[in-house]
Image (cartoon, rainbow, N blue to C red; front, side, top):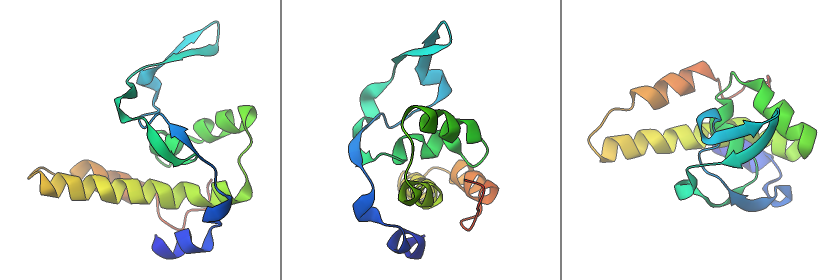
Length: 120
């Protein structure tokens, strides 16, 4: 993951306040448009792509398409989607180990999305 992150133009990636758990169960819609976000306790400053890398999970391409419809992603940001996703999953696994829990969920997510995927 580090090599892919080095190759991507991190200095071109936008930093912004991100939700931190940008998933369907934390969104509310009114008349087909996003009307609100809930569960803001994970909000923090991060790369813009980090906000939907987790909700994308390698299988929900509509998250990227929908986001791009509102605010287009640069080529550099698209190159960061998979490495940011992997970095988050590895962090989840490390945290799980530190807390004496399981890494099953993080490993399952990593196995679903190869690091060299070009599906983004």
